[in-house]
Image 1: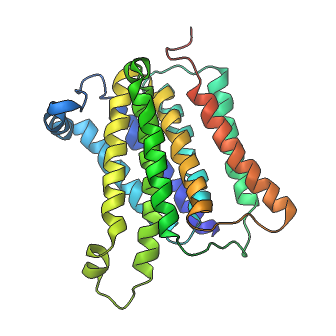
Image 2: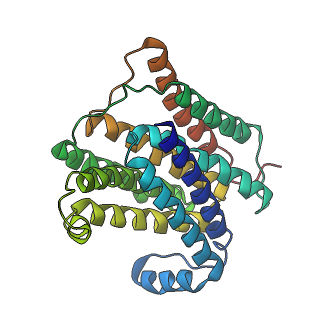
Length: 285
């Protein structure tokens, strides 16, 4: 378990670095929306830096899938929050975005949450079978809730609505990825091509992650990365934790101390992401 969570942490570094590369081009690339969406996406793909960031992201995602094949989805989600810390650090050092005390406190809380999570690991950790009906209802409800901010002009103009929707899309992508790996491992007798082509979660996770990436890049166009990324990340973390309980039957460790540390890790991650998301919309003076 520790090995796969370490892989998740490594994946978060690659994914955070890739996002910094993509954010660095946000002021030079068009917003992908409306009838010009395909033209905008083509412009993104022609940009070497943005395309390189996408490649780094893809490498991180590949490592993430390996980690998710053997670790609980909610635990991997917490480890992936290290990518938020890395993004904020890179945004400050490389992109010149400024961080205040609140933002650095949020980064520290995320790292502490990762330490608590590692300390709570147990060989008895287990999850139940996927409840497909529960996952369907949860997915529909979360999408409906996430679409609500799009009706608010201010949240659209500041990029907050796109960041929120991207976080939900990425979170659902994590749940679909877990469903994909479970379905893939459950059919060892089938050929590789059949196991991939007949797996419905492959198409769901691809759709969710593409939507999340487009929405996050749009959010980068309107807001500081140090704000947009944590806001998206906070929701992409909450969704797998909720989904792990609702759809995959995940349970807390039976040992009181380990259970308390696990709850503390989840809470710290969510609170820390909220702290970063609630930071000033413009660089602190």
